[in-house]
Length: 216
Image (cartoon, rainbow, N blue to C red; front, side, top):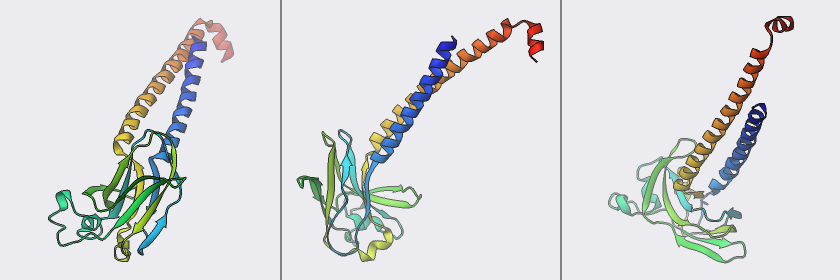
């Protein structure tokens, strides 16, 4: 039983270390790109980034809700169509996702159906519009080419950003799997510790009382 207890505790420690390393790796893959939109019209190219295989990612434009009708700046559509009639779209971006060899993997324009309302990591209220959702069959090095049709100086106070990130559905699924894995590791460690406690109690019970006093 002593051997099994030590084995289970050691296995739990190794599994916890592996799970922590895996979660750290996933954290680096959840947001592939987060760049501010430039102020003046023209063309820009982002740094390269690696898109993991068989995971679903989204490209979103975020702005902070600092002023009324901030969502209208992203484009009209959906539930905001009527209320944005007098507030034309201000962020107008043509984008293309290139493979590192220059091939075009995806392309499109901003101004689709708006919007999603949420909070960012700093707990600021933000609103976003989705440019695209995609999944690639193999791991790919890529970069984004962005063409701004108009100056954005007047919306810079809203901190407009373009983000390539894993979808919330994927993140929730991974969180559930990680939760079950942590529970299994905890139960294994608990059983191992229980075995060690039982062994210690048996040895204590089998020790003659006189010998116990001499030791103390």
